[in-house]
Image 1 (cartoon, rainbow, N blue to C red):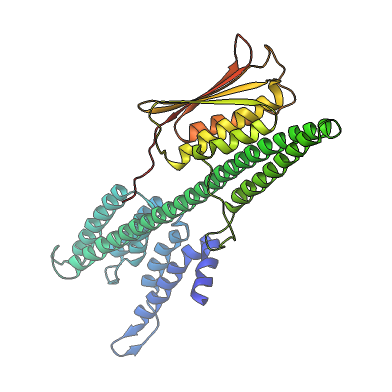
Image 2: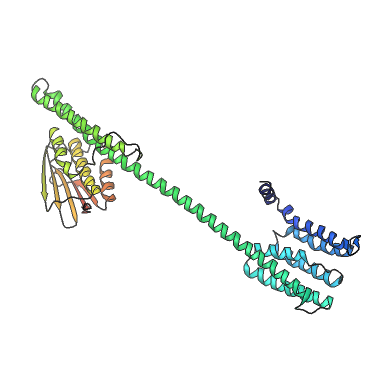
Length: 392
């Protein structure tokens, strides 16, 4: 814990961090020149002075690594040439070479490192009259190469860790964006479901309530029949709302009951409820009828439901026709009505048509809607025939 705190503190104080190796090297130089075979004695002033002078540029090694390396190396080489009795390794130059390798490009680090190694070895061998590639001369060459190699390895390690962290952060952002996208899609889907369910059933209930109110005194029998339709439609609305709200449950919530997702098999019930609201509806089916994927079944059902609801609310039509044409690769759903030409569309928000297009697009289909020349309105949906999986 204390080591971590110290590292963070040093990271915030660049000059102090850069000066730490310089202070350590000066202390080592004092101890090394004061130690002798017969015991401790006064440090050699010349050797300590050259080491201290070479360590001064290290205070700026993080900010100017290449100039600091050149200057430190020049001082160490001058000290080796002018003070042959100074037998210590040019440690300040090694620290500068390590820093340069960690902060600069690999090319710059190795060119400087090899050049410095040759210079250190050559100057030491010349001033101490030793062979170039043996003994202490070769040891100094190895030290300089090792410092450069260690710095290069640290730089590669830091870059690798930075890339790993960047990939992890990118993956985290991608997961969050994907989660937000899925939440938005689910919210829009549930909003579509609620709009379709509520708009259809409330429209029918409103129409049937108007019929019952109008006939209550003159024809109680038909008024009673309209009230029965209101009861059926309100129950159906509650069942579908319960199913839609059930989509918000967690998988382990285990709701008491969930109605099945409606499909074309429920079309007769839908048509009956519309007829109960006072509008005549004809259903035509061509082609070989087959069981479709649940998503396609639901999309076709909801488009027919929304089209009939809009007809009932806005078209002032007495009759509507629903056509199902099963082709080789597509199901064509057409809903037309006999409303008068140029009928105003009331105060609708347009969410119904938007919802139909969104539903069709979600399963790879299309929807076109608009008034007919001869009067009335037409909705045409082209849905791909994605068949339901067969059960064995």
